Length: 62
Image (cartoon, rainbow, N blue to C red):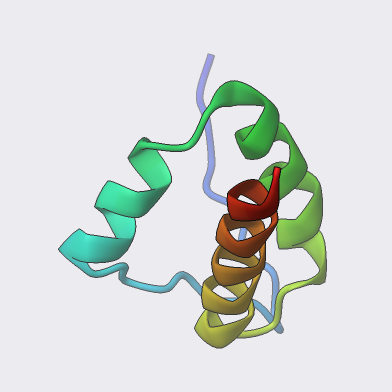
């Protein structure tokens, strides 16, 4: 069976910094599940950064 890469005409991959990769790898499974849904609405890297900051603020108040 062969696999082909499928690209979307209005979406592109973004290279993440080592710091961002580290932040993402430290997320718990429930947070990663939330992120997987939120990613569908992101249009730029700043959206991810904002989402992570908001999650950090929420977890600090719990």
